[in-house]
Length: 452
Image (tube, rainbow, N blue to C red; front, side):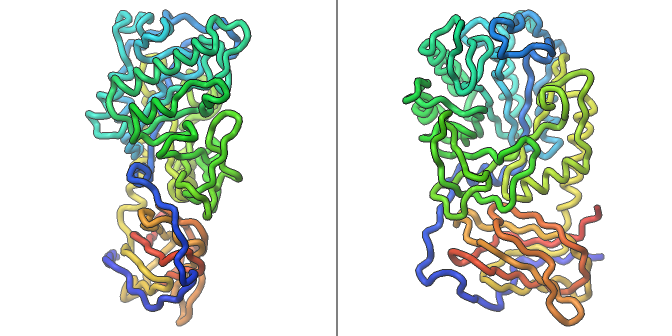
């Protein structure tokens, strides 16, 4: 069947559903707009725990020697290609996880690749990773936990524990030196991750917000200092399942750890700041939550589960962040690459050929799909979020047997809403906004017949 793509939908009515005085709508900045458009990211974990699976970073003083780290086939190009095959447009490297071992030759302490046998201590994984991102045209990001560090005896939210060889002041200086290295020596970062948040200065933490503003002012910041701009938030689980509705705005409050805390995890349609959600989850399950590789005892998510997670992240107005492992050889395992590629191809195939695609303005819009009935089972909606989230509730009807039948309805749309429904055969669709706070603008409305 020939697919019909129309450029613009026809508005047939403009019922005023909002107050005569249009409500002030919170808007994203340029960096947040770019981040939402990126949609799919990946985060790569590689640490000493790969080589010493029994290591528990909270057992102070038991951290493995840097001498165990020797990934003879390490290839950051292969990492980035694997992520890109899954559809990732940005990739974060976990440059320092909870062990405290650093994947770059930090000058803050000796516990890093400079004291590992890999490349005779002359290697720099962060440098290699950044070069690979540039080579394959993906946006780079860095995860460097300030809240936990086994080598320094530091536990969430960044507090030095009893018996540590470092004082709190010394640890704070280590954090600032390492972040200065990461944010100064490797180029512009698309996103910075603060897993576990940041201990605020007033509670004894390091002055990270000022450093961020100075060195990486345009980076998107996940769970960063409250004073940072370009904030994004966690969606509340590591399963890739954003709640619904899921709003891009929220009211931020400061918790004890200095993180951005969002009540109920779904945002607030009347919130005062733009702080959209990122839905992270690992490709594998089992040991270490699936975030780190182990030879045995892990399972891989099926293609169907990955697709489900895509619908419950990107399809619910959140970015999808997929965890990728690296094995002890220094490569993403072949079976993982195969699944990532399979997923990336499946998403492309599902959404490459809409039956109808166009734009829509107004509160009631008639979409003429085709001269003869066609099958539809999925709708993709995208607000023009540069103008804010304006729509609060919507409904979609299909013309069936000479009358309108409700086939889908919902609330939050934001950057993207993907909604499946029972297949219908129709020539016309009616889009209705039933509640809004300002004149609604859809930059994309697309209908599909997706073969499951």
